Length: 199
Image (cartoon, rainbow, N blue to C red; front, side, top):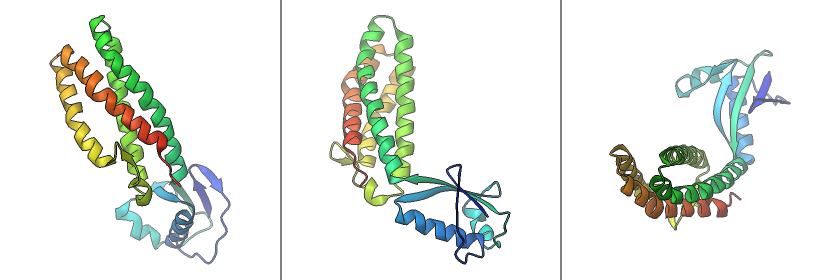
């Protein structure tokens, strides 16, 4: 059996595992002991999903079996949050600049900043979803004293209003929302992520 974790082959000693399911369960326990979680499994190149898991788990383990795991750790999430903190700090400064860009006819600069905002929020949501695999860590993530979901529930209408202002080309509202609504919230996200401790 060949075992890969995040693309790298690892030495694995079998301890009586007879089926693919035995290996999956054993690896899952190893992950739990090491503050890690499995986010993807492939057996002999085929992605295993919830529908195929039970059938694949019953298959006997062969010498030629190749099992690949995609794994995320608490530590890697903490590192991602630190990087995102820096991104959001830079982005908050950039969003504060949008009214000036719009006044000076630099619409393209404003649009690129807005695209960055969408990308960074997507990246943050993806990382937060991975963090939710570690509930005790995830629940400790507070932004301005609020749980992540509650903070973004309040933020989402602002982003929707911002999107509407962009579509109707209301540059005054775009500038105001950037400077007075979005920028301060991005600073709060950056601060929360900077202080985040995964231990």
